[in-house]
Length: 322
Image (cartoon, rainbow, N blue to C red; front, side, top):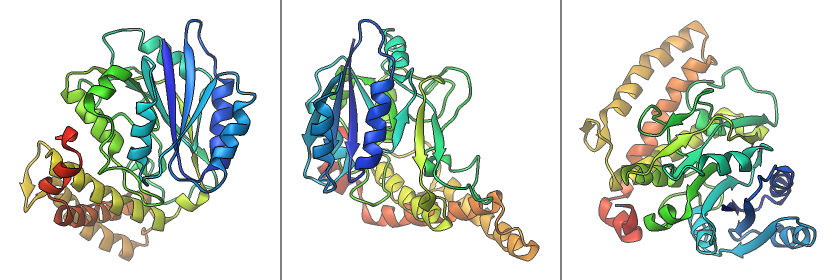
C-alpha cells in the first residue's frame, strides 16, 4: 500500500518542522510506501526553504507543491492532484502524529470494505487551561476529539465526522467525490472550516464505510492564545457561518424555522435565563455557563451565513458537493 500524507500549511514553518520530525519517527510497516506532500498555501515564512533543506536528508519521499489561491481547500485539492498512491492521509501543520499512526492506517485500510478512517485528537497544551474551558461541549474549538476506546463506524454507531487533521481516505473514493469544496475551509487567518465535515458527509452518503479508530492518534498543539474567551467566541461565530454555507447545499434532517434549524434557536433561548442566573449567582466563569453563551454565538454566525449564502451562489462555486 502506498500512503500519500498531505500537509496543507500557511506560515507555520516551526510547527511544520515538528510535524515532519514526528512523521520521520513513525514506524513504517513492511510493504508500505510513504510519501509526504507539503501543500504551501502562499506562505511567506520560509516554508519552501525548510522543505528543500529537509529533503536532502529525508529518509522518505518528501515533495513540495505551491498553491497561490488563498484557502485551505485549494491547497488540499492541488496536493490531491499530485498524489498517485492507494491512500491519501491528512494531518494539519500544528500537529504531531503518534509513532504507530502510519501503521494503524495501513492495518485498517488493508480491509477493502473500509474506505476511510480517523481517530483521536489529543491536546498538546501550550499554556495553563482556564477553569471556564468546556470539557464536553465544543471540543473541536481546540481540536480535541476523543470518542473512547472502541472502534466505531461512522453513520452506524458513531455520529461524529471525519476530521481533516487526522484522516485517511482511499484515493479512488476521494477523487470520485471531486476533492474538497473550495467554498469551505480556512482562508488565511479566518476560522471558517467544515471542508472536512463536508467530505465526511459525502463519503457516508455515497455508501462508503468509515471507522473511528482509537489508536490512530495525533497530538494537536493548542497555543495559549486559543485559550481565551475571545477566541472561543470568534470560533463559534465562524463555525455557525460556515455551517450555514454547508446547510445551503445540503439541509440537515431537522425542523427549521425561518431557514434556521429550530434546535439552534431553542438552545439560544434556553441559554438566556441561564446566563442571567449565572450573573446573579456569580457562576459566570463556570464551563457550563460559557458553553451556553457559545450556543448564542453559533446561532448568530449561522444567521449571518444564511443571509449571505444562497444555494445558487454556492452551487456555482462547487457543483460536486450538491
